[in-house]
Structures are given as structure tokens and as C-alpha cells.
Amino acid sequence: MDAQLLLGLLMLAPALSVILLHASGVFTFLSLSLGSVLATYVAGDANTVLNSANNGGGLTTMQWVQLGLLVAPCLWLSL
Image (cartoon, rainbow, N blue to C red):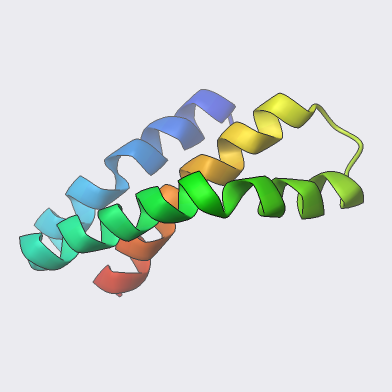
């Protein structure tokens, strides 16, 4: 899958979860706030774990880890 397409889908995931799955806006906001805290404080450790298993570029891995941690609570809440 193209990286730009995946990035676009991850950016639209919170809005689509509210619209399509009828999630509460308040809980979506709180889950995005939790994702922001996770992306700020946990992403460094998660990036270290992923880079120890993969020899790829570190900067792009860090950005994908931060984006995944930002969106994951919102998607989990919607399900």
C-alpha cells in the first residue's frame, strides 16, 4: 500500500469513526487527547523497540509510531 494513501487514511480515521460508527464526539476528543499524550511520551520507547527489530530509517519509523499512537485510541473507542 502506498505510504501517502495509508497516511491519508490514518488522518481521516477519527472523523470517519465519528460519522460512520456514530461514536460520541466527547469520547472521540478524549481518545485523541490520550493519543496525543501517548505520541508525546511513549513514542520514543516504542520507536526504540521497533528499531531494534528493524534496521530501517529511524526518523520515518518515529513519525509512523507517533501517528499510530495518536489514532489508535480513537479507533479502539469506535469499535
